[in-house]
Amino acid sequence: MSFSPQHRQLMVEAQAHLREAEQLLQAILAEQSGWEVFEVACDALNVAAVKLRFIQIEASARDEMAGEVEAETEAKAEDDTLSPD
Image (cartoon, rainbow, N blue to C red; front, top):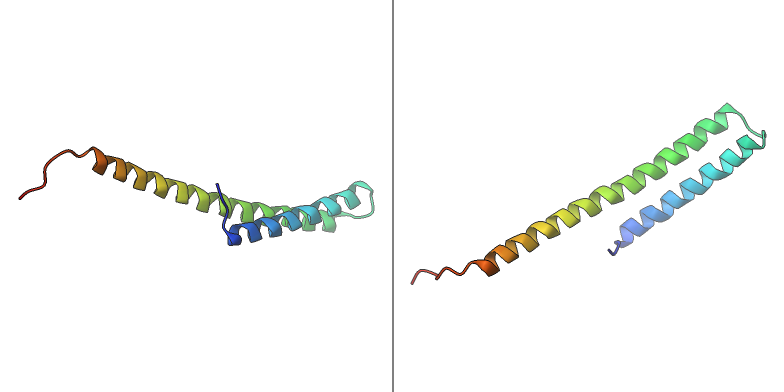
């Protein structure tokens, strides 16, 4: 499966949000931050998840459409009836 440039950009953005969340969680675990930072980390994780889910939904829809086209093409190829004269 190949990803479009837009999907790759969304992946880069999602990765940045994941890294932000990881850094924030490390600060919390090191007891350098509190509840407010936890909320920000959760928000970063949610944004990353939404971006990745968007890619997943679009890819699934594209695969479904490709499957329908393939099935239609196969059905036409198997149709051995003669065309009306």
